[in-house]
Image (tube, rainbow, N blue to C red):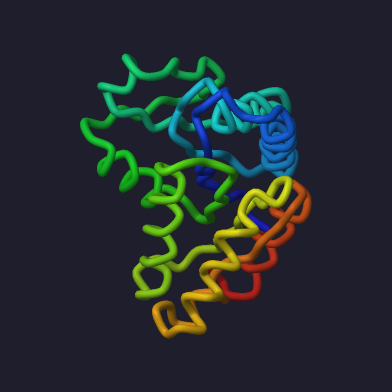
Amino acid sequence: MGKMTICVYGAASNKIDSVFITETEKLGEEIARRHHQIIYGGGASGVMGACARGAAREGGTVIGVVPNFMDEFEIINNNCTEIIRTETMSERKDVMEDHADAFIIAPGGIGTFDEFFQILTLAELGRKNAPIVIYNTDGYYDDMIVFMKKCTEKGFIRERALSLFRVCTTAEEAIDAIEEMKAQNNL
């Protein structure tokens, strides 16, 4: 298995239960231990910062993608090996998508949902061929998955869309799934 660049989407907020921070630090550690690198939104706080800290602790490469205006909203992570600056949020997403070989959706809010549904839509339309994993720490995404299944039953989401991602609860399981999907599909 060659080295992959794994895009990690997740919350920037620190106003969340510490289990999400702890488990996402483990995710960063596991990514680095397996010699993959991270590309993410570049923030120092919340789930995003936790993932970068975990990877940095294990000597991993961490690429942060930061819109210039974000400096006034959040602290940029000093654990980043490299910072790529963009003008807009759309550009930020494009850069992360273009550089990523796989995607992990850690617990997050509106921005994370936006990123997940954009990458899932691109995969469903055949525009992006990459493993997608929902990192379902502490059952965070249970209700969303149930809702997506309901939407599928009612004909709003194609059944195929639900097969384009895996749901994992541990760091090891998440990276195993990505490596397995990559190998199976030559993604």
